[in-house]
Structures are given as C-alpha cells and as structure tokens.
View 1: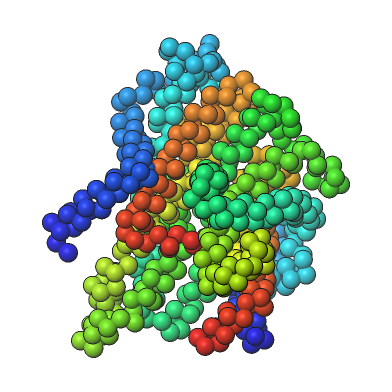
View 2 (view 1 turned 120 degrees about the horizontal axis):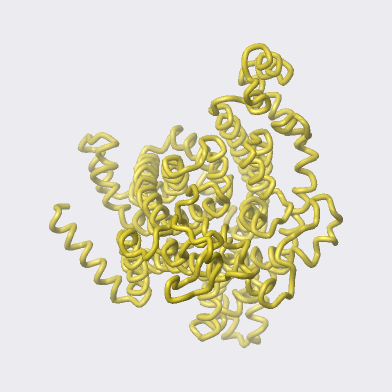
Length: 289
Length: 319
C-alpha cells in the first residue's frame, strides 16, 4: 500500500469512528489526555516537587484548584503531569508488543509443525500466570523503573498477541492466494510480510487498542503497589496510593487521579469498541486472556 | 472421551512443568543468590563459600531444580531467603485466607451473575439491559485499586458502615475475618459478576434465538419453562470456562485488592516478598498460583467436555 492510500484509509476509518457515539467520546477523551500529557509541563500552575509546609492537605481554593497533598504539593498540577510517564511507556510498549507478538503468531500460524507446538506450550505456560503476577515476577528479577518496565510490558503483553495473531493467520492460511504464493516459491518470511500481515492488520489493530488499556491498567496497578514510577515524580497510581492514607481528611487527593485515570481508560475502551465496529470485527472481543 | 481427557491432562502437566522451568530460570538469571541476599556485605570469600555449601548452592543448576521441584511436589518449598522460616508454614494460612475470600466472592457472585445475565438477555436492548451492560463495562475498565479505594471512601469513611481495612492476623479463625473482609469481597464480586454476566448474556441471547427455542414456543411451552428448561442449561455451557478463568484469577490476580484492604492472603505475601526480594517465597507463590490456574482450567475443560457431546465429536474429528 502506498503512503497516499494508507493516509486515505486512516482518514476514512477515523471519520467512520467519529460518526459513532462511542468513537466520538472515546477519541475526544484520548485526544484530550494526549494533549494534556504533551503540554502539561507548560500549563501546570505549580512545579510537581514544590512543597508548601504551611498548606498540607488543604481543600480546593483559588490558588490550589484541587487542594494540596500531605506534603503541600499542588494536586491539580500533579494530576495534569501524572499521566505522562504512563502514556509514554505504554505508548511505546504497546506497538512493540503488537509487532513482535503479531509477527511471531502469524509466522507460527503459517509454519505449524513442531516449532508451533513447542512455542505454543511455552505461551500457555506464560499465560498460566494470571493478572499482573508475571510482571511482578519479572520486576523481582530485574528491578523496577521506567527503563525496565517498558521492555517488560512489551514482552508480556506480546505473548497473548501471539495467540490472537496465530488464530487470525489460521483463517487466512487455507486460502488460495497463500497456496499460490507458496507455489511461486516465496520464502515463508516473505509470505508472512506480503500476504499474511496485510490480512491480519485489522485484527491486530483492535487487539492493540484493547491491549493498550490493559497495559495502562497493569502499569497503574504496579505504580500503586510501588513498583512503577519512582517518587517524587507524579503518577496517578502512585498518587492514589499516597493520598489513600489521608483519604478521610483530603478525599480530593484520591478523587483527582482516579478521575484522570478512569477517563483515559474508558476513553481507550470506547475507542477500541468503535474501531472494532468500524472494521467489522465486533465478535472477536469475547476473548478473556 | 477418555483419550481426550488424557490428552488434556498431559497438556496441563506439560504447562505446569514449563512454568516451573520458567520460574526457576527467571530466578537463576539474577545476579547474586540466596547467600548474597542473607549475608549482604559479608558476602565475600570464605563466609560466602560456607553458606553456599550449607544451602547446597554449589551443586549444578539441574540438581537444584530437581530438588526444588521434588520438594514442591510434597508441598515443601524450602526456607525463605533469611533462612529462618519454612515457606510452607508461611504460605499455609495465606492460601486458606485467599480461598476464604474467593469463596465469599464466588458464592455471591456466580448466582448473581447468572441472574443478571439472564435478565439482561431476556430484556435485551431495554433500559435494564443497558444499565447492567454499562455497569459491567465500567466495573471491568476501572482499575481494581480505584474501585477498592472509592468503596473504602464511600462505605468506610463517609458512611462508616464497615471497617476500611483488615487488621486480623493471618492465622485467625475464619469467622474472625467476617465483618472486615466484606469490602474486599465486594470488589472481587463486582469484577467477577461483570465478566460472567457478559458471557451469560451473550450466550443466552444466542440460545433464545435458536431453532429449538422457537420450536418450543410454537408448541406452546410456557415462557418460564422455555427459559429455565430449554435455553438456560445450554447458555451455561460457554459460561463454565469463563467462570474457571475468573476463579483462577481470584486466586492469583487479587494481589492489588489484598494490598488495598491489607488482607493477609497469598497476594499480599507476594508483594511483601517482592519488596524484600525474598526469591524463594516469590518462586513458591508463583508456582502455587500457576498450578491452581492450570488445574481449574483443566477441570472446566473436562467438565464442558462431559456436559457437551458436540464438543467431543468435534474434537474427535479434528484429531
């Protein structure tokens, strides 16, 4: 596909998504969050480390719109800045996960045989660790922090993608044009790149949107548990975990990051939903892994 | 049928075996070992050698893997990193507590999910369905710690109906947890109901649109009889696997919820072990959770094989 037709297709899909209520709301929420994440260092009224010992746990006021936390830091500024790290890390890790999981899955779907059998057993083994457990194990091994979290997330969220891509490839492999490509003597990797990948891209896109929201959930849970972003840098998960202790005195310290995180995740889910409907892949969202 | 079950069992065992290898290798890849962790700065020269000798760390990796897995099969996971406590003692009560929490959530959640799912399917596209389905999506998208924190804020702090966190020690009698663990169970129930309900709803809609239901309607079978005798049993079959996934998730994925409510279960022990870099404990918990996960899914697969003859014949043909 040339760049021009690709751009035309993207514009077409986006227009279709905006025509649906879920897509319009979802894209607006995600867009808003992205704009805030990029511009927040300039628009945040206070520095995120700036403490005010005389004004700890104060309520909303003209100066501090959402009050201050237990160290007298401005909650509103920290809320604006709190999504930057999460969006940056998951924003890079999701496409990486999708690419490696997608390529491997499609390749296995085409190749089959003993390699497929063996690698799928390994995939099963990794998937036998539910929830954020595998992330926690890797963090024990490699330590926490952004430079470790990004490859860790990219690795683990790529594993279920292998399964999805493999299943999608199985539906295509039996078709005639694959047999034709094989008969022409193309190498397997060429068939994956030129014949299979274009046919599973839609599935992978929808999968990617869902994975992104799950990755954000995972990331914020890790932050909440104290294995994610290192303080004093602002992060929603960490903010909730810090402010939780003072919840009876200063509920806004919890409510602000909760609203920010929830709107982003709901926005991504609505976008994924609209994308699936636009691409005609609605049924594929039943998968629970 | 028998051959299928044997094959499924074999696959399950292979998966558990691979998990144990992955976990063992993961810890093996670490710089340092149990001895450098215990001795810290004294971990040089003779002391280190002596410690490794007593803990059997000088033997090849394969021998240690064999010893570890052999012990694990007997429920003996060795000593924790500080060399003081037996992991099996540490884990025992925690497993029971996590099971207690899971049982609480399941006993309320499964019937509730079945009722809500059926109701949503029968009242499809009315306000009932829209309300339930939106609620389910909200419960599934909002992070656990957010839902848990909001519930604490509303019910424990503003209304003061229930205690916010659990203070009962791990080895207390099950009944002593009672008023304290309600909120934790409610959070888990919410998430579980959301997942199962969606599955029941969609398979119930399929069942009600099927030919046999139409046939029954034409014969003049009463509506409630169609719903409960003809449609529901068929709609429950696909739900079995989702319930199994949820059960497995309840046992392992509740880490965050247990931490929020300070509940002395397996998940919180895991987080404590990770913070303290207590690798043997992390290894043991991960292994227990993975084995449970595989076991529960295996059980669900065999159950649906037994209940659904179509699944058997289909898989027979594929083989």
